[in-house]
Image (cartoon, rainbow over the protein chains, first blue to last red):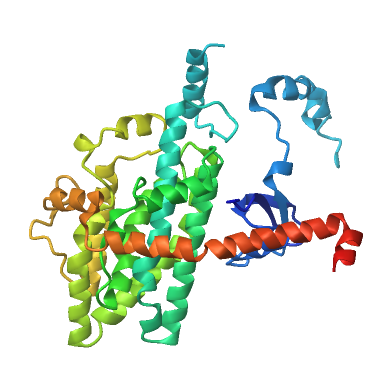
Length: 94
Length: 320
């Protein structure tokens, strides 16, 4: 009954005030071991102050082939950007 | 859309320097080439721990021992970054390990040479990691995102490896006459294998063109080798050591060093498994894998039991 340790995705907060960011993955028997292994693998040089581990199978990703219809609705809404509006130079603080 | 269209879109992304990410469409041959290259690279990091590990218990000072331990631990880390990059392409970790153990997958031939004297630890950091960095700096810009990102991490850490190696060589080369002789002996043995790390000449490297077109590689084997020679020769001169190549000389016209013929018979013989330490390396990896089997199984069984207890706390407490 050979069973491989599952794969975990690792997210590290590099310092307080910043988001956790995906750094890679590793194998571990459970979440606790995934945290310990992530400490040894991804923070050997003070790269982090906090670690999240998520078993890879729990991540749902968007399909790159659908990215056009998925992101298209945002593309024609230029009025959502401040540069869409003209404000005279003499008006400041805006 | 036909697969021809997919292929055209893929190539235009590569040409426009858009990285390819795991779920993007890619030609099967691109995926296969990457799995082969990344896993070989990972195996090289793991096997590369062995020649250096040989000296951990015999490091001449606590400082050198700490440095060597940290370096060998980094190599393990590099192997793991790379295995996980290969897994994003659908490779299975255990399959990859089996391919190493059965000899189906190769690793860098340099690690089939023995570490005979303490200066070898310096020479490995300086020359072997130096050659690896030349290749890896190029790979930080490779077209496959997860591989490129792993390479960025690795290059940051390799810089320490190379510098500690050169510092060790300085200690030996500027030490007693005996120490200097050890340093020279070590350079004599590692120089040519380090040049072989870049692989066959471009004229004998059939996969190179496709790898360049896909931007897996961005420089040819010979270009990288020349870069390495050009930066390394002055470093050897500073140490007062002699590079073991009578044909080595600066070519003013080319703006590069000319160097002698590489012994490709030796290279192919080591690749085919007949280097000084091939069998020993695979035996060591196999032993580690087999000795660790019960730990992997026990950890999995323990994790499953904990999970069950969490699901049914009452049943578990009654059973206890």
